[in-house]
Image 1 (cartoon, rainbow, N blue to C red):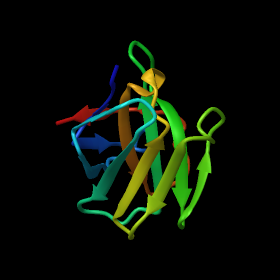
Image 2 (cartoon, rainbow, N blue to C red):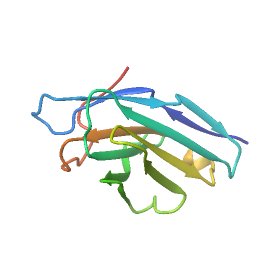
Image 3 (cartoon, rainbow, N blue to C red):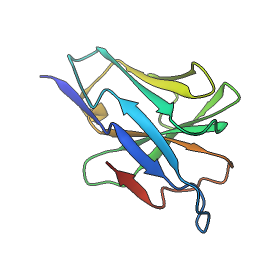
Length: 130
C-alpha cells in the first residue's frame, strides 16, 4: 500500500480580510507518492514578496484546512497533532519546505503553504489554486 500526498503547485493566499494584497507562491512538487514509513518533502517559494510569516496547512479528504506549522524568523511552531513526524525549514527569505516522515495512510492529504505580512492568520479566507 502506498501513501499519496497531493500538492498544489501554485496558490494565491489573501492573509487578512479586507486587505487587497495577495501572495503568489509556487509550491512543488505537485504530487508525491511514497511507500509506508517513507518521507516526503515539499517546497514553497514567494515569487513577489518577502513576507516573514510562513505557514503550512493540511487538508484531509472532506475536511477543512488545518494549520500544521507557522514559521517566523526561522523559528517554527507546530500545532498539536503535528509535533511528531513534521519538519519545517526556512532556506531563505523566499523559500521554505515541509518534510513529513514516517508516512502512513493518514498522511494522504492536500498540503498548502502560505505567507503573510502579519501574524493574524486564523483561517484560509480566499484561496485560489491555479
